[in-house]
Image 1 (cartoon, rainbow, N blue to C red):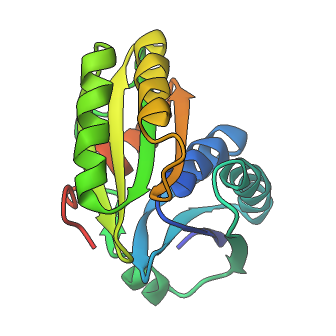
Image 2 (tube, one colour; image 1 turned 180 degrees about the vertical axis):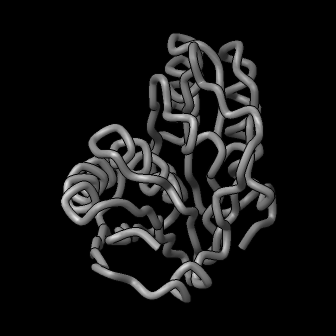
Length: 195
């Protein structure tokens, strides 16, 4: 087990994806996976104590740009059993290259609203719906991939489609997401209906 484990918790899931990318880019940490319960999602990563602390600061700050509720904490010298609390561990292997891709996410409450929003995104730009994550409390987050210009255009179309909607929770675009973020959230075995 690593010297420390960092945890960042947000309401929904989009903020944690942005936080995971920022944490992994800020410090030499390894993403372990995530867990969701009651509408809140927690990211887990490990590394040396100083690296985890640095990743926590960057990841929490990035998540706060997406959502209001962000909590972070570090466990120093964690016990091996701690890994058992990760419901969606990062799977080894897989094609997680994100060389020229951008990752966009749009998060809403309710599935019907989300389907209409997804339709507006794929009509607006050359993007692929890479995954749809559902978490407790009726939160749905669609992840789209494509070139940075296309992803930005698709997410802008989603924002326009959801303008003024009480169901809209947030949206973000990550240019060149780290491979572990793609493995954890795009290629997760959770997929649609994960809760």
